[in-house]
Image 1 (tube, rainbow, N blue to C red):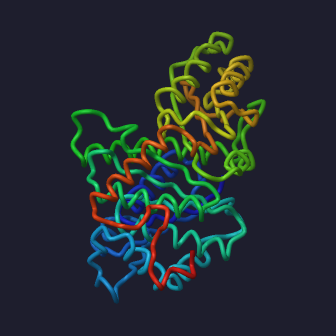
Image 2 (tube, one colour; image 1 turned 90 degrees about the vertical axis):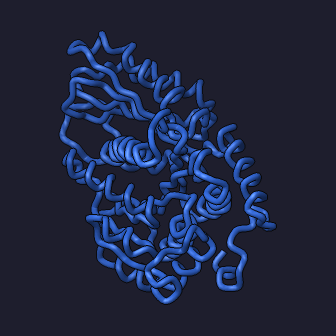
Length: 358
C-alpha cells in the first residue's frame, strides 16, 4: 500500500520519522514520501525529514504552548505554504494519505483536522488520520485537547486509526522511555499493515492488497489495530493453534484501543513464511473474529515474509461505539471542566476564522 505520511506537531513528527525508518529497515517501500509540520522550530530540527515551519508570524517558531485553538489558526493561516510543500510528493502511485498527530498537544491536535480538511478538497484518494490519545497521567489539558480534537478529526478524515498511549505503556517506564517504546510498537504494527497491502513476491494463497485495507476502513469513524506473534513450526499443520492464538491475543490483549472489539469490519493478516501458514488456521481465526467483532465483513489473507515466526495483524474498522471510546470521552469532558472551559467538546474550535471551515 503506497502512502504519503504527514506528521503534524511534535509527536506526529517523531512518529512519522519512526514509520519511515521502519519501512526503510524492512525494505517494504510502502512509504512514498514524508513531511513534518510544526510551529516549534526546535522540534523540527531534531528530525531527519523534510519539514515545514508554520505560524512564524504568530508564534515566532516557539510553538503554540499546548493551545490547540491557536494550533488550528496557524495551520489555516499557512495552509497554502503547506499544500505547496506537498505538491509533487503526492503522486499517482499513492493509495492513501496519512496525517499523523498526537491529539493531546497544541499544533498536532489543532492543526491536523485543518490539514485533513484541506487535503480532502484536493485529493481523491483516502485521507486517514493516525492519532495518538494521551494517557491518563499526562494532565487535564492534554485530555481536554484530545477530546475536542478527536471530534473534528473523525468528522474530517475518511477514517481515524487511534492509538491509546495507555494500551502499551508498561509500568516503571519514564515518560521518555514510554513514548519511545510506544512509537516503536506503533511503527511495527502500522508499518506491517501498510506493507501487507503492497505487492510482494511470495506464494501466499490469498495475499492482501491495498483495496482490502481501504475497504476495511470504508465505514469511516474510528479504527483500531492489534498484533501478536509467536514462533512457528516448519510444518504448517502444526501452526493452526498458533494462528488462532495469535489472533485472540492481538484482539484481547494487544489492541491499540483496548476492548474496542465491537466493529463494523475487520481485516486479518497472517504474516510469515508461506509454507508455515496453515489455511485451516487462517480460516478458523477469521471465523472467530467474526464472532468476536459481530461483523460479517471480515477479510483475511497472507503477507509472505521471510521469518521463522507467524504474526496476526488485525485491523478493526468502525469501533467508535466501544466502551473504551466512551470512557475516554467522559474523561475528556471532565478534564475540560478542570481547564475551566465552557464550550462543549463537541463544539470544536469556535472562532470567526474557522467557523466557515467547519
